[in-house]
Image 1 (spheres, rainbow, N blue to C red):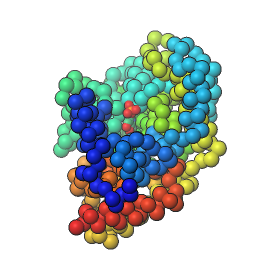
Image 2: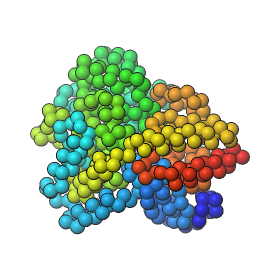
Image 3: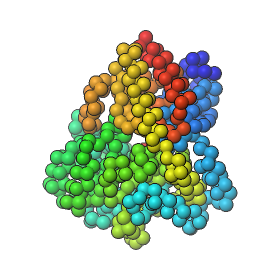
Image 4: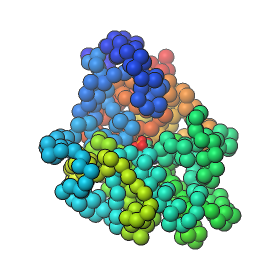
Length: 426
Ligand code: PLP
């Protein structure tokens, strides 16, 4: 079935599965992030494409929220995982792939001396924060409004009208006081906060604030953050869960030429498999060799290491970054052009491999408060129209481009964008 032959409302099998799912799991989904997405059930993915259970195809720009950086079901990665898993999965002890994965990982990012693998970005962020507290003997951390560092109590916040509170009901309310929440790209605010408080262990930052608006760091911002952290003896943590291996082979640290003390990775590092990592200097990381605890049954499992080795092998042998820059730039231009053609004020910002689409003034948004001028709800509705026309994207506006997007995908995307925009403008 082609995109033109069906709309979401006619996806019969998906609707049946969704009805059953709601009886089995809250909201019919296993992550709250998926609650408001179109209730499509997918059967399979290959490269830059997804197929739903009703036989409809989609050009995918969600990439599973980012991990499918090589495209879906990358053959070399999946064959390595399947082959290695024949020997077993997890031993509660060391195995032969760990050193190979560790060496390749450290050599690829280039600046760190030690790595610890985990399974999710959320937990590796916690590991980094704990290391920073242990190293400094201080308790609090600085973070920026609009960044996301996982769903746990001490990092999940919501900032409304400049006031920060818990991001969820049921959260331990006192954890909000664990962090100072500052505007992204605001060096003066960071300077003032670090000067006024001597209880700050770490500054944790998404070097590109992908999670809200894909806001790039303004010129020099990350270098200033580095300098201020040095001045105050504060540990600088880059949360590279999204940017790692995506915005450059060496992540944002390479792209912006700023070296953090610790960095956290996930998503793109393992070709769609659940692997994360925290990396940094021997001095900091070796605290985990003593009385600073970091654990996880599945850390460094055989399939995880196999996935990392194969994924980093591909990225090193055939770096996709130049192609991604080109594809993403063309796609960003196309989206604006399609909007113009149909009288829709579509605007884009970000990097070619991860950018944000919304409705509103095209001027660059520099921080979370700035997003208020955009019509994000209109975009969320538009994302459902895009799904109707065979383009799968996040309702929050983030578009991810994979190494598997090429000419065929660009042609299909352009055609589908035009028909979705015509629909939205009608
Ligand atoms: N940090 C960032 C920047 C993220 O974008 C995410 C997830 O989207 C996380 C941490 C949490 O990672 P995970 O969902 O693997 O726990």
